[in-house]
Amino acid sequence: MKYNPILRATAKYLIGPIMLFALYVQFHGDFGPGGGFQAGVFFAVAFILYALIFGVTNARRVAPMWLLRLLSAFGVLLFGGVGVVSMMLGGPFLDYSVLSHDPEHGQHLGILLVEAGVGITVAAVMMLLFFSFTGRKA
Image (cartoon, rainbow, N blue to C red):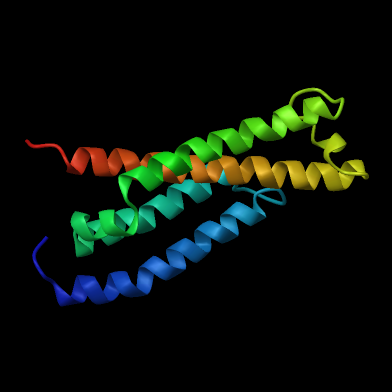
């Protein structure tokens, strides 16, 4: 994209609040609408906006492909790991109540970890898709 000072200044003011809103949606997901998927999309949108305004090369320096692949795998492992741990503690797969001494605390911990895994995976995969498409020759 051509150098445009208005777009650059606007993006600098928008990227931070978009990421902050993504964190709000992530951690508010077990109390209201939202959660990992929506937060992951918002977080990826902040990086995609950065790439569109400041260049894909600069964005790839901030979030290299190897890191995005690692994060996407980590998110899936976190999601599945919560289920495996709950099975190892004597409950069914993804039964969060066995994760803590109090079933209610276990529910909160389990949903927090599962939503974190979903959010990390969605954000990483969305950025991987964007970077894959921008790297293609037309």
